Image (cartoon, rainbow, N blue to C red):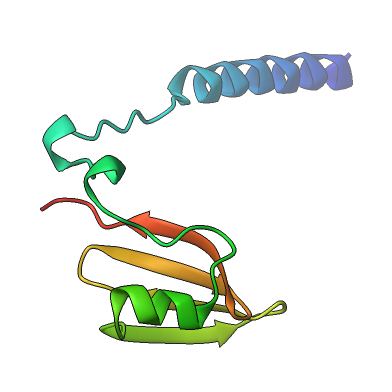
Length: 100
């Protein structure tokens, strides 16, 4: 009889605890003000597949270079308004820096 009472108590506590945890879980909403978002249409960016030489010829030498790291090797070139990500020597993606 005591085991049954202990089991019921344990189940009740488990139910209460899981209900409390579930009611406290929530998702955080991230809002980025429109004025601080970067507008890709206002800036000329390197396109996917361009070579490092092509990027350097068109936009000049980067302010900073990071990498390469990982396999395949990924490197970053930092310009005043954007960052270019390279996989080996080809543009993987270009990202506009946000307005401040």
